[in-house]
Length: 103
Ligand code: 5GP
Ligand code: ZN
Image (cartoon, rainbow, N blue to C red; front, side):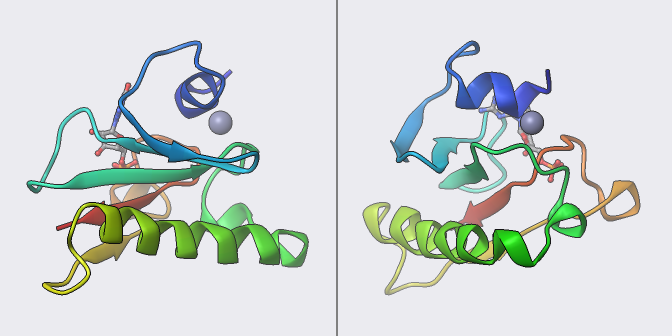
């Protein structure tokens, strides 16, 4: 099973920001900014390139979860970045879809 599936199932501990039935938001182990949160679906998708129309609602939830992560970290006024490295040539290193929230 992949690393982020294990994190989603609490088989590997992480510093959780929040979660619901479909997604988990947790702090990156090697932060690239003062706030660096990862938002993942609990369903395994390899990357954005692996998503399809059946994942439309899930993708919407993930994007709104990045907004929540930024808001709860106090980043909404000042601004934040959302990044989805997609594929090896884009620097993706964990092949379970995740959105980086950086601020
Ligand atoms: P990617 O390079 O695939 O876009 O991002 C993967 C991210 O996952 C990296 O920023 C990396 O620091 C983070 N990461 C890798 N392994 C772990 C882990 O075991 N726990 C947490 N919290 N983050 C991880
Ligand atoms: Zn996975």
